[in-house]
Amino acid sequence: MDSLHWYLLAVVIATSLGRLAWFLEFATISLRRGDAEGAATANGLKGRLNRVLLDGKLPVEQRGKPEQQKGRYDLYGTQVTGAYTLGGLALAGWSVLAATSLPTNRFALGMLAVTVLTSVGCTIVFRYGGGEVTRMGFESGLAIADLALVIAMLSLVLRVFGDGSLVLCAALVLPGVLLWREGIDLLTQMRLTRHLFDRPDAKRLEPATD
Image (cartoon, rainbow, N blue to C red; front, side, top):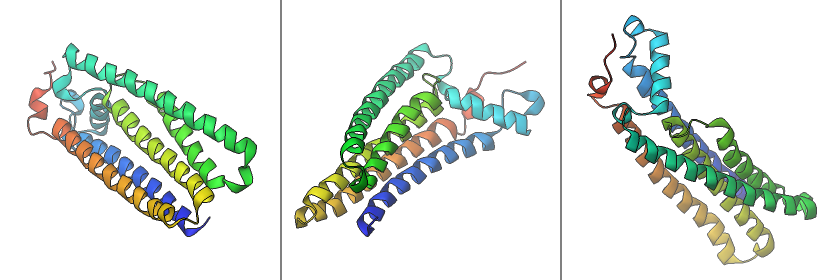
């Protein structure tokens, strides 16, 4: 694998690590808040883990609000459809390449495999329709899958038109632009997570327990 392929791979890895940091931030916020719904284990490990599970379903302020839950479930349906569509497209491309030019397009095949496994894998791992962790999982999985598909296409274009300076320039600039755009979206999502789960009044909004 040449240096340009390493660069393209690094873009996908950086995106994956950024999305992992988002999940870690969510878990950290939930664990830090403790458990306001379990009086007997308010500050214990069991209570904190229970808080993560509850937050993974819905933010506190959206619980008991059917209209917001419906909107989340509609989003879940859209994400599932998008995941299967993207995964099917990548699988079709992978099948054609594997049957015709496996020895010379291993990097593109690898990126297409990442697209298939990530997009379709979301539908297997994240099954709680409308849940916050499900939303985060699909947002992250589809972001990585989309980028991997673009990287695979760039690799194929480089192999066919690799001698052109315009193609080389696009292969260097486009992944950087996509990574920059991914960074903006990730920061927006992380701010949303802090807004929903790290609010000073989060515990006050939670239902009281007997």
